[in-house]
Length: 244
Image 1 (cartoon, rainbow, N blue to C red):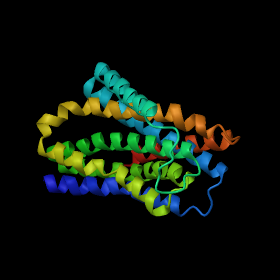
Image 2 (cartoon, rainbow, N blue to C red):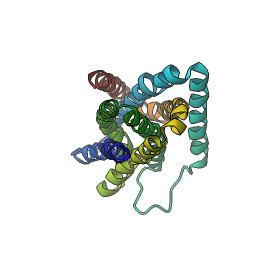
Image 3 (cartoon, rainbow, N blue to C red):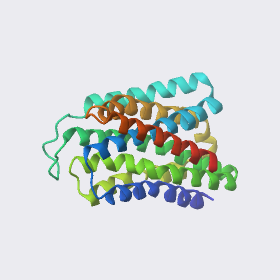
Image 4 (cartoon, rainbow, N blue to C red):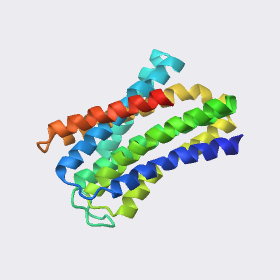
């Protein structure tokens, strides 16, 4: 049972790498495309955070746990934002846009934080009811693809090679099998912590959307493209949540 839960969540986690590969297939990557992609990432993350993570935290843990988790998640990303240097002079590649690299790191952190409670959810659900765990894995796999796009986009914009940004996108999803192992192996221990961890991840994602993605996507004169991308990303996740 534990092995099956880990393998399923590994498949879901690796879907972020598929998103990174899709970014690698973009023939060009001008500022209009970049702003639209940032808007799309912001829409995806808003939908996941509000309709998924925070909603589930409210349902399972109540308003207090949801608020505490959300605030804690945002606080951690705020601290990371203050800690990350704004210039990067010792990178293993020529960085043409340090700001994009920093946004990539923020997105990577937010996605990894949110993939951990998803992995816990898969593990605990599979331990309780295998069919539920399988359905949850399908849902997570589908929405991890646009999340991989969100991570890879800024890294590509800063000058990172295809192999590197696809690797970063893939790595962001690998918290899931680890968490699934923990959740399936100790369901009674980790199940009570799930609502807080879901809200925590939601708060982290909302912080990145508000502090990084929306301001940056509206700073180059392509606000309409960014807004269209935002709405498209939100709708895509709404549809995925309904069909699985």
